[in-house]
Length: 320
Image (cartoon, rainbow, N blue to C red; front, side):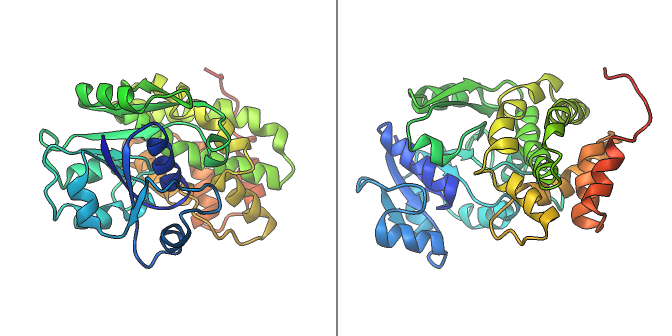
């Protein structure tokens, strides 16, 4: 299968490496002036992995789109709309779009598949999402994991799961696109909260954070029309180890550095996602105390210790 992976960052490069490894014809496409693209083009490697020569590295977006049966996109979620406006200039009929980012558009509250559907006819250009746990640092060492592919088009997600499954990644068929996307995006916000707990030396509270975070996000998924049980699957709870505990988690590290007064230089998707989820909570009248606490720290200059402390001083209520 001809696959073009758009985005040369940590996860985008890992996807290209993985899909080549399992036998697909892969092109890795990035922005010509992006440091991560320049490094890959010159050296065929980055800080995480080495590309085999079978992967073509290019900044030619039209070539990447034209050659592809499947277009995998892995960029910062908040740039998806502007980036896809460029992609949509080319013929996308009968191509499958696979979104590998985890976020919600902050300005609109739209899921990422909804952003893409503003540009394409899903009957001609089906959209899928690829979510779940895993870090490139583990995959390149041969450590396996489980992930999910979801889509409104059942035949497309069956095809992708069949084509992409290997001994390294076992894919499951998602059954709730709303839940898969919201759950995947929201785990990054919970990851920031976990990092703040680490930074405050409150790491033992992560168990409570996991339990209450999952319940909170399940309420939001249900309010949006999804299946609340999706929050307990691979898209959200199943991704907690990689996001709330791993030293490689950007969102966890962002939260830890924030409370320590250290500037974090890499992308933490959970920052803008907290803004998007806060908006959705207000719009749909869903109580999201953890999301609201993180939002207040990031966008209202509330002290992290004060914000997280209030979570544990809320009025007494039943657990379920």
